[in-house]
Image (cartoon, rainbow, N blue to C red; front, side, top):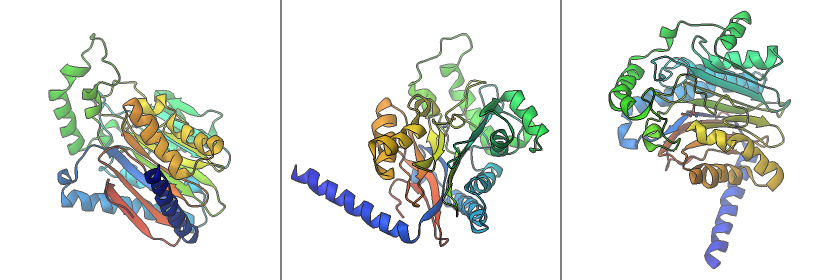
Length: 347
Ligand code: ASP
């Protein structure tokens, strides 16, 4: 009992101090570049530098929008653009391959002020899927468009297309070859009954690199966006949590903005992002508590892995994950940048 009280007191102090710091210099943009199982010793110094540079560029691009008094949506779009255009992440260029050797990408955006949202899924020819998601939100009466319909809609609304080969990178090709040699026969043999969703072999294929951003603008509004190639070797037609509003992406000014990454099936079944928002709205949890509850008490207990980023209108944020690492970073109103990759790296 005494130990529990002490623990609660420590938690309160940590939260109180970080809340005080955030009140002075609130966080205005948080990004992630995916959660996964890579270990610190598997990340070369060169790769670490490249990732650091890309995440910094994404934060700066989003921050420039906020500095120019543009909306949180604009900041999320700018940050995600940089990561979609970088071959380092599993979104846009460098997206992973389906079992059929194709790219099928998903993306979503949500506006915390209006609760309007847009998403695309299973698209193969849209250079920046986040742009198509924004076009769906702003220029259609719908929330989610998929496949060819989404591509035709994007093209008709001036979103840039790209040939399928644009998304290829030598590194992803190599990963796909490894996947084909070691995994295809074990997991998705045509005609064979699919294995249970918790099949570890399937989730061991999990590659890092889904990207996401949550932002807070000058007018006090939030936005969340997520973009991904999904999971290496997924069945063609599989859609993950990222473009499902309330699962991988959600924003509501009254609670928070959220972008998730991890084994999408778990985040979908838990309706993770909306659950986080509900824990704040109806259970009156702090952002930190709610984010922690979603990852450790819900996703982890279901057997899932991954993480999320969340931000509220006070500039308080959370970045929990139960994998060995999650590429992540934030920038404060005064322009202070923090970037980290693994569990033990704190601001
Ligand atoms: N959540 C993504 C999906 O399941 C993958 C990831 O975040 O790495 O499509």
